[in-house]
Length: 636
Image 1 (tube, helix red, strand yellow):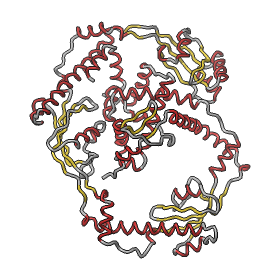
Image 2 (cartoon, rainbow, N blue to C red; image 1 turned 90 degrees about the horizontal axis):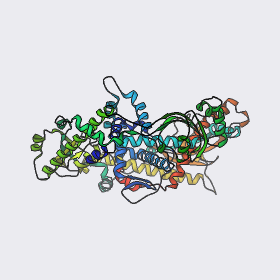
Image 3 (cartoon, rainbow, N blue to C red; image 1 turned 135 degrees about the vertical axis):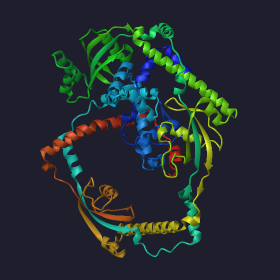
Image 4 (cartoon, rainbow, N blue to C red; image 1 turned 30 degrees about the vertical axis):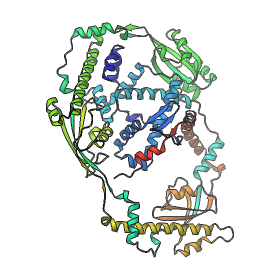
């Protein structure tokens, strides 16, 4: 890997300099999941697979843990609450949109990416800290490499262009549709509700010791005391090597001369663009521009939206779509170009500036060449030192001897579980978030006294993990949890009995031959019926009812019954009446408000449908089995 950096220098030091500048946490690049479009199962070590899209277990685990570390949540808890599926769907959405954008020829050039990063970096720089340093600190804390980040920025910019093109054709809904939506949103329902608490079930016999023992064996995982380990981590840092590296001006000049082609910058065109959904709109925009209106204002005048205007960007010829490249590079400064049709729509453009090809001087790039060469040699020396450490460990050398020989720093981590938590639930590895997963994997893969192979961290350090002690997994003894088991067993029996009597009640209520009156069912169990009037669909006036009751009530016909478990109760409810507002009495202001909200939501709905079609096109499937194996086990 490190050798390839040096080889990469020969194709252009500026590319590596760019990597040094383009660093930022991707916390702000979170994409919203739009619906459950990804379902199914695959049998492999991939968590998701489709045409052009493959996400490995290792990739997804690293991404998920990075996201969850900011939430302070374990992967098991996140899986239980559905967050793992959301994180995976977000990753799938990003990848299929990126893949589709690439197939359509949406390529973002380096200069545009650089400007975007500089814009994002501006608020991160504090007094005494440069933008580059601030970004690098955040990048390390997020545990991602520069290459990963640059790819994420480039992909997100391409995705944004594609998303804007997709939602550019959204339209306003009619007054009739708005009235229908008003009725739907303002519908209310009246319910009669019978609540049967689990605790109201009596005459449950205490369990025998044999029953409790069977219950304990069936739920033994709930009483697991997880395996714990203690390790020593020895660290090799670049500062230990950097002071011995010397670089002369002659070396820098030689590199510059050998790679002179890399410092030649192609001709660029500064282009302002708008992409319209129809040729008529595009022609109307062009006419307004020719009469002196700005492209942005013209696009808004014609479409009523600002999303069709893509702004101003610099492009090399190879960075433009094939249909656009020739007309743009054959035009003169100030020319209005278009309409030209591509897969994205109809383009109208203004050529604002032409930057001729040029070669950067040695003095202007000297410092950057030196910085890259220093980093390359530093990484080479670090790798050589790490390889030597690996060889000496494999030959049986004691870690303490290597610490002295290489001046390594050491730190001990004691009695932690597979999540990195000690017995007080403190995360011992919070400073290693980007590398936590591989450190813990190493800590639990070797025996007492053994050392894992030297591993490289995201920030360039190398570490050795030695296992000092193993506390084997066990279970809390049966006798210690007997009283707790007894309470759980009785509560389970009450719950099952309560669900049983509620099911019997529903059969009586819905009998086709002789349905029982609702009041008689309530009297049978010594409970009363509570009436709830004018309940709203959004549940804002639900009172003591659960969200599930409201949801089921609005999915059920008048006069029918619903039954479900809500907390420590079983709820049986009758839909007494459905109340709809008169559509002819809806105020004009309410109609306009609904139309305004719909104008905001329709583009997102269009995007959701587009992503759904892409998921079907690329046959994306999720491996639920692996997700369950990885994260389905209960957290400690």
